[in-house]
Amino acid sequence: MSLNHQQTAQPASRFVFSDRWLAESVRLGLLLSPPGCLPITAQQHTQAEQFARQHASEPEQRVLRWAQSLAQSSGQLQGMHIWRQRSAWMLMLMLVLAFSAGVSVALGILGDGASPVNVVWALGALLGVNLLMLMFWLATLVMTPGELSLGNVWLWLSRHFGGRDAVLLARSFATLSSRAGISRWWMAAVTHVLWSSLALGALVGLLLALSLRSFVFVWETTILPDSLFNTLVQGIGWLPAQLGFAIPDADAVSAAGAAGNNVSAQTSAQRVLWAGWLCGALLVYGVLPRLLLLLWSVWRLRVGLNAFRLDIHLAEWSELTARLSPSAQSAGVTDAEQPIHVQPAGQPDRRGQRNRSAQGTPLVVAFELSDQIVWPATQLSDFDQESVASRQQRINTLARLDQSPPRALLLVCDAAQTPDRGSLSWLADASGRALHVAVLLAGQGTNSRRQLWRQQLQTLGILSAAVFDDESAAQSWLEAHA
Image 1: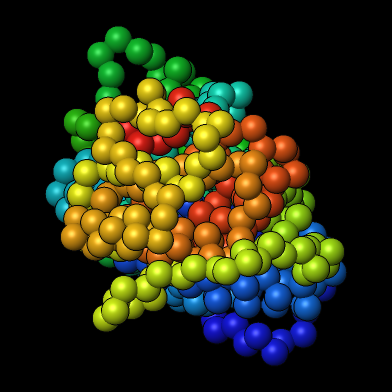
Image 2: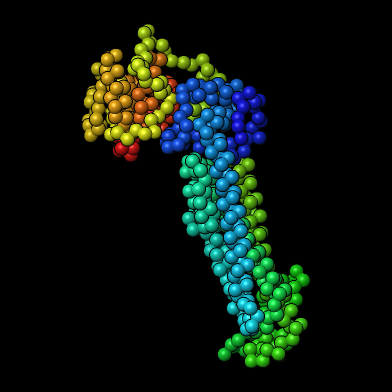
């Protein structure tokens, strides 16, 4: 599962759903910065972008290559491998449990052979719940996929026991599945494979019991005539008969009705007929429908997986796509005449990283705002605020961040200015001391200038979803991460 940066680019046709799933997971990981993920430095961001440009020609391919590179750096590639392995083992365990439950149900229904078996109750117990849930599933085909399915049980287990990145991977998987329109079909595939396992277990248990014990089959009634049961037996047995299963005739049905009072009234040949009737009904109405629906669901799932592509025109991908385009290689930042990078003695360089242990109160830092911008901001007055305009204020602010690392840090920048290397270096150092970081672009900067800010902030691990143009959105973000 490792990624070698010297690999040649694979054709677009060889990228599969898991590659796009990995890209979504990387994007969410950079946006949410979940605990446990390895920090990604600015250098790794740059290397990933260069790798994407060198080894892919199409926009989506570059995004996928970018994600593969960062996933290796952050450990998400290995995390996905672990998640998929554990999910597969959980599904296998659920299959074994379902099969064992089916065997146990069949053995329990038939009993030890000391008492006659009521064929109507036995068939109802073997097929009733399965058919009821099957009809419920068919009824939900016209509805939005719900939570009450065995597929969601499997996803819940995968999310809770799938390893370090399980929650992030499960969320990105669910998001992409919904966009691809395959949520219903993977849930259906898991549901049908589990019910198929249970039904096969019941069939195996039934055959095992019939092979090792002798049973007398009866039906009992107080008010219903023999003809009704004969019609019922013939109707249920018609479809299995097309596959070679025998149907008890009228004499066998009458003998089963009388066997409740006289066990010897049922011959061995009639018992064999009833045993075949039960097995045939369970196979045709319990096992085969689930297997056929499983194949159909898998087919629909494969069609959806093969057809799905990332919508790189969405806002969440568009800016990354622009940054990965070959023309973006020549785009850079304007160097300050005297770039200032303040790094206190003895402190590590934290650019592109996040402080996972930061739990201090949220902080708003206004960074070198012009006189045209009214500050302090009224809507952000509920939060601690600091202004940075000089070299000494840069040092003092970093010292405060070291003393009490905030859980949420909002950096307010002047959108009318051009991001230079000195400014970006300090912003990177400040963001490395907080757990969650966002940027508010204040002022009257042009769209192109704001776009440049967003591009450069992404090299610090601050994606466009955490870059705001108005105070209300920034306030909501602070409140959500407080």
